[in-house]
Image (cartoon, rainbow, N blue to C red; front, side, top):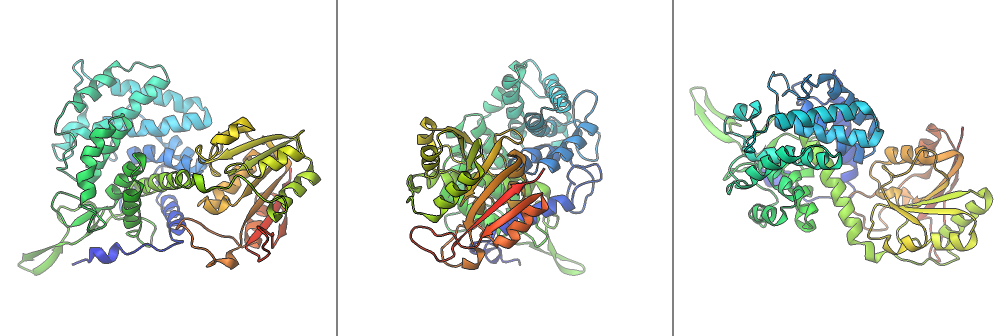
Length: 512
């Protein structure tokens, strides 16, 4: 018997970033010949549904090129009536089409490309065509499910269709009728099937604003992790669904149950295979006697020996929310002041003095303790601020223009700034390559970038969150040089009256 407790071992610091990159490698290695994501590690056909709802996750992590490849593949396989088929079948599916809508809309917002808009409009129109006047959804996929999959998961596909229809001023009456009909089911959120499907329903309730109802359904599941770090994959079973663990973590993060979310997230990440993927389920297997003797059986488990891409999708979503919530949680601990003699501030001011940029962006600005000195010393320069946490920048809006964004996805146009500096932010970005690519995108030609962060040679000095990474300044300089920068490095930047090599500085000039 597989020892589930040994699989769900204690999490160690510094591991999550490695797991993130392994999961991205898995996605790239399992891209189908059509350009989307494969059904699984053993089925090389494209899975349109998962390809679609993967796209917003990829965009949020700065993987824009891969997201566009997925989008191109979806446009190619869309049916003439706007629907999408289940993988390897001729069944037109409301659930699958609704998931794909998420991706088409995300790509349209990202690229403003009309082909995604047109595909999106057609998909929403087809979903509307399957809804009767009384709100019944008449799609063929419901018949295919045969009662094994709860019909309530349709909420997870109808919610984005309704939300996007409101944004685009499309007809929404039928969608509202269908959602209202499903919500009237008193047994909607009962845990009766695979936990993956149950988690779909709970997250849909949260997204529809039915938070209290979602909590009522979630709390009994969370009771199951009081004495163990897992939720059963089915009622009264001793196996766990990896995807569901991440989905429940997502729900926890969305409604502010960070402690429970972290517990589920860390338990599920520890199940990751060496390949970077996750099996659909892990746990104890049944012993069956046959004429050939006793054998192990995985009957009733959820893809127990097959790696499935949707587990990675929810890993990425859960990790993203986990980081966002953490920054909001620690916002009050950020300092608003810095000593004028601090070496980090001196390096920033010295670079601006030498370069004399017209516009400056503090990316990962915190409470703006560097900006105050820049504004005072260089009042003629246009200064901007951006941070992943809107909570931490609340007081800054009175001083400078503040926007919310991460290092992998900023809200700025191409080549918008002459000088960008980022201090103790890259260490939290997880996807460093995507962050450098984004910095390059928004920096003007001949502009300069300043990174101040921590030396990897000093690891062990501080206790770190599991996603934080420190850098070898020479290796980081090479990454910048590969994308067209000339670099100058400072191996030791003094800070807080200390001169111990904890911080380095790296200036990159963007060539034309």
